[in-house]
Every structure is written in C-alpha cells, then in structure tokens.
Amino acid sequence: MDQFIFLILPYVTIFVFVVGLIWRIRIWWAKPRAKAVLFPAAKSNSVVVRRVVGDIVLFGKTFSMSKSLWIMTVLFHLGLLLVVLGHIRTVIEIGFLWRWFNVQGEGIDHVAFAMGMTAGGLVLAGVILLLTRRFTPKMRVLSIFDDYFVLGMLLMIILTGLSMRLWMPIHADEIQRYARGVLTLQPAVEINNVLFAWHFFLALVLIMYLPFSKLVHVVSKPVAESWTMR
Image (cartoon, rainbow, N blue to C red; front, side, top):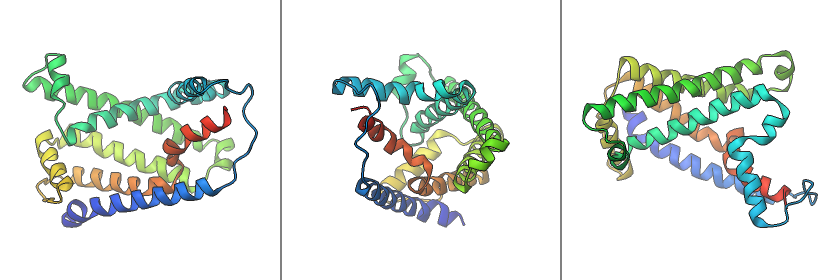
C-alpha cells in the first residue's frame, strides 16, 4: 500500500488533475455566455480588477447575503490559505522568513507547530460550521452529494493532519526529501507514519476530484466575475 501511495499515486494525481482541469475549462469555455452584466457596469479594467479582488478576498457578496455564512467562509478560507502557505515547507525551507523574524534552531519547529495548529483549527472550525449548515432543513434540500463529499474529505484531511502533529509528528526534512524525490522522478518510500500516509492519500484523492467538483470555482470565479462586471 505504501508503494502505491508514495510512488504511484502522486503521478496519477497530477495527470488526473491537469487533464480534468483542461476538460472542465474546455466545456466551460464552449458554453454560451450571457450578454447581460451586473449593474452598474465597471467603467474600466482597473475597476473590474478592484471589484473582483474585493469580492474574492473580502467575500463582499456573501457578507451582504448572510453574516453568519460570511463568518464561516472567512474562517475556512483564511485557515486554508495559511495551511497552503505552511505546506510550502513540504518542498523547500522558507529560510528568509525565519531570518526575517529572527527565529532559529528549535524555535523554527515551535513556531511552525503553533502556526500549523492555528491554521488547522481555523479550517476545522470553518468546515464543521459549513457541514453543520448543510444539515439544516433549508440547506439539506439544496445540497447534493458533492457538497457532503468535499466537506467530509476536508474534515478527514484536517483531522489526520492535526492528529499527526499532536501524536505522530514528522520532521520537515523527511517530507522535503520525499517531495523532492517526487519532483525529480526519483520517489522513495522513506516515511513510516500511518497518519501521514492517510493524510497524504486523502489529500491526493481530493486534488484529483477538484476539477470535477464545486471547488473548481478557485479557477472559474475570477473569470466569471470579471465577465459580469464589464
């Protein structure tokens, strides 16, 4: 099983993700686009960029519709952003950041642990709130399998990640060596950690599923928003 997860599945994931994303974009691009725009229409490209970035970063439309949903959305996306940034260390050490804050030696591991737990806690809170919302009578009628599957997968990924940090931690050097092996087409099974194996496996499954799910809005939303604001 370790051979499949660590040596084969990463490349299968990259292939499925890239092909799936291209397929999704081609279908999306071929669909007819409405000629109507949101009122008032933006007067320039700079206004379009400002509105799109404002909505994506601050979730302005969500805030105007539901304050409670806005809080859930902010918690989830802020935590997810921090998690993604933190996972940069799985490939390369962010030495400039540690030097900037004058963090050295064991202090790096302590800071990374605190930041990782904080980010994971924010995402966990956001996912639990969003999943709970799906079970309310109003949202249960509107929800489909994709909604539950994505949130369920995220919940398991977060829980395995947090559990690994608390009870079966792995040093960043081990993960970096493995990641570099994958990127240089020389992967090796060097990590003996069952929680990491599950965390990694679930993350790869979610990445493969991303182009075929609602999570693809990460790619589609900026373009769609810019079209309707012109």
